[in-house]
Structures are given as structure tokens and as C-alpha cells.
Amino acid sequence: MKKEKTEIPQKKNKFLKRLLLIGLPIIAVIALIVPTNHYIEVPGTTESVNAMVHIDGKKDTHKGNFFLTTVEIARANLAMMIYAHFNPFATVYSAQDLMGNMSSKQYDLVNQFYMQTAQNTAIYQAFKQAKMPYELKYDGVYVLEIAKNSTFNGKLQIADTVNEVNGKTFQSSEEMMKFIQSQKVGDPVTIKVQRIDGKPHRFEGKYVKLATGKTGIGISLVDHTEVVTDPKVTINAGAIGGPSAGMMFTLEIYSQITGKNLRAGREIAGTGTINSDGTIGQIGGVDKKVATASKEGAKVFLVPDSGTKKESSNNYLGAKAAAKKLNTKMKIIPVKTITDALDYLEK
Image (cartoon, rainbow, N blue to C red):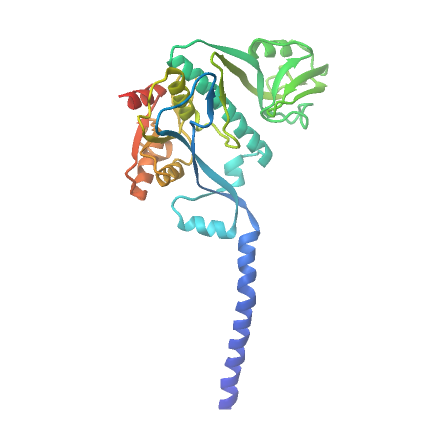
């Protein structure tokens, strides 16, 4: 009896060991390979804006750098979600929280649209601040959303620019909408479209009745304007999307066209949208952007200040909290307008 009692546990132990040897690698593979319906956001990169902005006849010869900062977003597997749980600079989002009802492709197109808009507004603000001449050219309307009852559903893409309706061009979105609303529901309509990759397209459909009762083609839109300047400004941000580099583009353009040495040899990072009235708008993932800027050795970090007392709605407070966690010596500088940023750098 004693012999049987000692042999049974030994067999069980061997079985458990074999199970662990086989099972643990399988669990590890599942954790690393099988994706979830969530996304993880972590610190991205710090990129020199100096190399992205090119102005005809100008060259940035001043020492130091202006940096934009990014976050990295990836489809999360189980291992990544576990990692995020223990990393204060990683955030997990559901697909709905991150993209709403958009597909991944639509989400990417919207971010390309935001980047293009940020660049245009940055050029406009830089020339305005420098009191140099510029021209706003109307190119059509950006497509931001396509209604389910639109006959262009499946043809148009988010971030397309509609620049012609039934052979007519327009000088404003109001003029385009007035023409469309004067047409009859069910009548044929042909539109010309410029895709974000620069390729032109032509689509045929019919006018539809909108929820407002008016005639339309079934899209939500915003003006697509281009800033024409002399000297010409070109910005190449590669695959980076979104609007949060607007302020840093503005500072680099302004520095080049005026010749002012805003950096004075400093490594200056920052984030924030640039609006047409010169205000600096809030962005997402500010803690992660502080982390990447600090890691890359930036001495100053310019960040939007909404003026509110809540960290969740004020990037400045969020950036200060992140800097405290990191124990960084990088200066966190709050700005509400592009004038605030210029005043700090000049004075």
C-alpha cells in the first residue's frame, strides 16, 4: 500500500511537467500571435522638423532642432495588453474608442487629411505672423463622411476633394452647396474628385434627399484650401499622420522665412495643433510624447495649455505629470497661441 501511494503522485508530477512543457509554449505563441479587438498606444519617435520643411531660396543653418513627437499605435495581442497593464506610458483602446465607426483604411485617410490640413494652416500662420504676403486658394471640399443613402457610397473615399459638380467649378463651399441644393432629387449628377494621392477621378450618381429635407449628394464636408506663397513652402512628413505637428511646422517655417534664430542651439520638442486663428489646440497621447522627447534629449517641450484645471482636458497638466513620473529635467512650457510660443523662444 505504501508503494502504491508514492508511485501515483510521481506519475501525476510527470504528467503535469509534460503538460507544462507542451502547454506553456502554446500559450506563449497564442499571446504573441493572436490579435485582439484592441489597440495599444505607446511612445513613438521624435523627428526633426528642420529636415521636413523646404522653402525655395531658404536654408535652415541655425544650430539646434525643432522636433515633432509621435505616438505608435498597433493592434494589440494578449502579451501587449499584459505589458500595457504594467507600463504607465502605454494605453489600451478598443477599436470603437479609437476609430469609431471607421475602418482602419478610413482612419488612416482621416489622419492623412489632418496632416495635410495642419501643414496648410502652419504655412498660413507662419506667413501671417511674419507679415509676408500669401494667397488662400479654394480647391474644393474635403469629404469627411459619406451618408448611407448617397449614390456615391462605395465610390468616394474619406479625404477625397470634390472640385467639380456637373461641369461647374466654385469659389467656396457655400457656392457649391447652393448650386447642389437648387437641383432636383433623383436627377443625375457627375462629380470630379481629386484623391489624396493626387490622382483624379470622375463618378456618376444621383442627387438624394438629405435628413434636412434639402437636395444633396450625401457627404459631410469641409473647405479644402491651399496656401500659395512666394517663396514656395514644401513639407514632407513621410508616413506621419494627424494634426498634432501643426505648431512645430509653424515655428520652423517662420524661422526660415524670417531668418530668426528661434532655437539658439537648443533641442526643442513640442506638440499641438495650429488653428486658423493662431490658437494651439489639444492633442492625444501627450504623456507618451513627453516620454519620447525626454528620451531623445530635448531640453524644452512646448505643449498646449487649455487653461482648465483638469489633467484630462489640459495637455499642459498631463505633460507636467508625465515629466514628474520620468524625473526629467526637460522644461515643460505651456502655450495657448502661436504668439506665446514665439514670445518664449525669442525672449
